[in-house]
Length: 272
Image 1: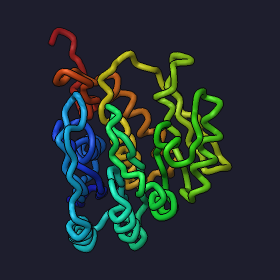
Image 2: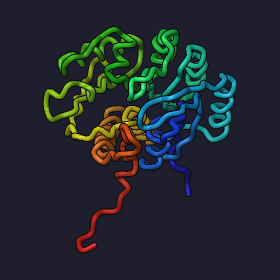
Image 3: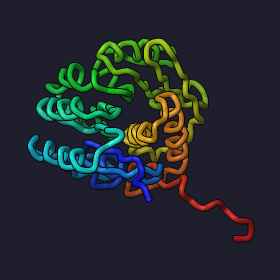
C-alpha cells in the first residue's frame, strides 16, 4: 500500500483545538492526505480569545522542518502563525530549499482580534515569504496590514489582489468572508493577475467560525499535494470550508470552531 500525499504545516498551536496546527491536521486527515507539523509557537487559547503566546526558538523550528523534509518528504507546505521577523526569515529560507508548492496564510490576528504577528515582522512577510508562495490567502485585515488597502465592498477585492500580488506570490486568494453582507453569498477572489476566479458560496448564519483561515489554507495545500492545478485546488478547498462553516458548533462560552470532519459523516439512512 502506497503512502498518501504528504503535507507539512508550519504554524502555532491552538490549545482549544479550533485553529492552528490542530485545525490544519484535522483538515488534512479529512481530505485524505498525511499531515505533518512544525510547531512555531504555543498559545493559551479558547473560545474567548488568546490568553498567552510563546514562540519557539528558531533552532527548534528549523530542526523540526529538516527532520520531516529530509526523511519523509513533502508534496506541499502550508505556513500559518510566524510571529517574529527572525522566524519568518528562517521559514522562508527552509521553503526556498524545498521543491514543493507553498501556501502562505499570513496570519496577523486571531478570530477574536488578538495580534499574532509583530509589526516588525511585516516587512519580512512581504519581502521574504510572500515571494515564495504558490498561493497566498490573506483575509481583509491581513490585506490592510500588508498593503494598506482597505476593502469595503466586493468591488475592492480586485484592487486588494493587485496590491498583494506586487509582493510576488504566484496566486492570491482574497477572502471576502468578513465583508458586510451585501448579498447572501460569501465571495472570494482567486487571481494570478491575469486569470480571475470568483468563488461564491452561500453565506451561512453561523457565528461558530473559529479556524476558517487555517482550514482553507490547509485544504488548498492538501489539494495541491494531490497534484491539482491551483484553480481546482482552491475551488475544492472553498467547497470543503463552506461545509465546515455550515456545520460549525458551539464550544465554550465564545466562538466555536468549524467542523473539520463534516464531510466524513455517514449519510443519513431512512428509518435509522
